[in-house]
Image (tube, rainbow, N blue to C red; front, side, top):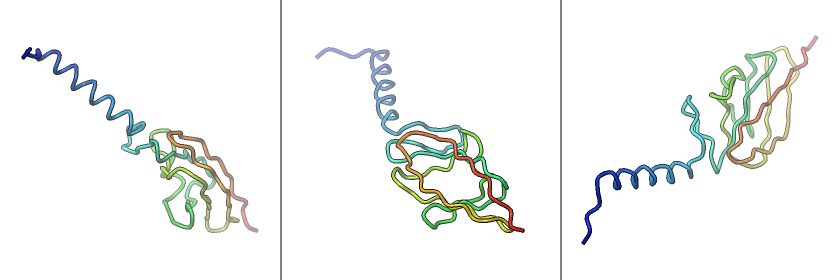
Length: 113
């Protein structure tokens, strides 16, 4: 039986790690994972304190999801995005979230008089 050198073993382990991580999708520096079953939205919303709902579930404030390193991570498929801020008209949009993609989402809510 032929012995495997430590360099060859290390190279095989690194290759295996790369293959396994490739299936997980992209890992962003904030720790948010966008992969084969999810995508992301980078929110640019006025006003910034707007509440963000996905399919009726509060996800946080729009300002929580600014920049490519901190997107709103959502399961792939069609979802209703609803934005609500006190003193403003609500905003609804149906959005299809593709796998592994971080997209920009921009909205300005109209102020109530």
